[in-house]
Length: 447
Image 1 (cartoon, rainbow, N blue to C red):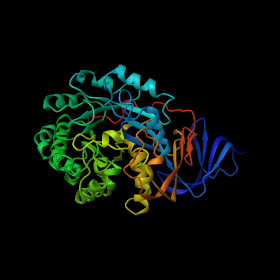
Image 2 (cartoon, rainbow, N blue to C red):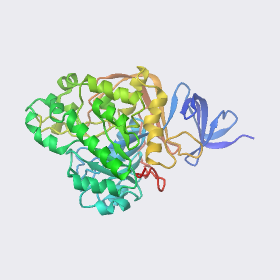
Image 3 (cartoon, one colour):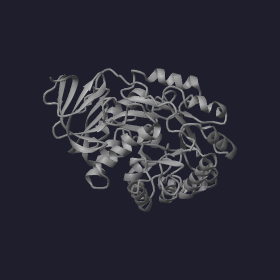
Image 4 (cartoon, rainbow, N blue to C red):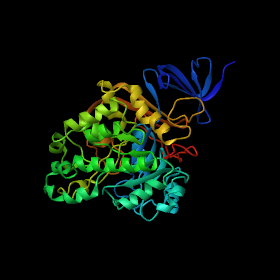
């Protein structure tokens, strides 16, 4: 007797924990109900995926969607449209908004704004500050909380925590894995005179390797002291990667597509302030070191660090120009191009963007293609060649540093809990995004 499903994805190449192979997928009530040969089964909808690869829904665990308070750059709706256009099914959004996301009330406000207005699913980091240290055990366990985020070095917004006493107290309070922007603020302040007016290539001279390495070493020392596990964001140096390789028991590691793809000084001469990021894009030696860390298994996840600014804000002469670039929509095609170039396997890409986030943060029902899991899929054509254009970008700021870049490998479909939210560049009129759930007691900070 044949089974009946709401949806069957037919004839695609499924990338799963047990390898890559041709399989059908049956979806019922928003969840994966069957994987295998479903030729004898029926469904309300059958989608032909012949020639396509079906990946677990991509989870981008670092984005800045700017709402509330900075909506002229981006908001939850436009940022999530960019996400699903690029094949991303869930995002973790950052707390450096206006007001800052640092309380139960400001988190609840974001969840209210996002529910069924965002096109992808979501969770929100809560900013760790000197003022909310005692509330951290409560804040990191709230519904839709991705955990605590701390800025050790100044960047967009006003969430800096740079004194040793406060950082120490925050780490001591953690129960879940917390995320850190690791740059040493004292060193950044001491080196400001090294910025050259009108020359964004001086950005990595100012925010140098030592500023990043000092902060990362300090952070790992605190994690070891309190036997906590922490998450170090957007690693930009070979030096940090070598250090973290010896301290994996305390730290998980994120890298970004732009630190894997863009290389100074050439990118600064080509893109100017549009490649200005914190921490900076660096030279070939550091690019090579980041790739080596990825190949050696030091890297746990990929995050886009999508951080849009308007053209007017980027066109101001350095150093008054804003640091940040779009990235959520280009994460998948840029990294699939690396896969096709032989720099990493498709299975490793899936581990970095689906299995890894699910495992690291204890996400309920996402990150795998397995029965009972949410029917979240990123469907890609590994042979499709496209040129990334500013006109394709859904982000409110309307630009990408990859404008004009040719890539092989393209997201053709994004499915969220069994519903198609993007197919061949078409987006629906209504949004269905909901909060990501986490296992109670997931990914403990205590070792």
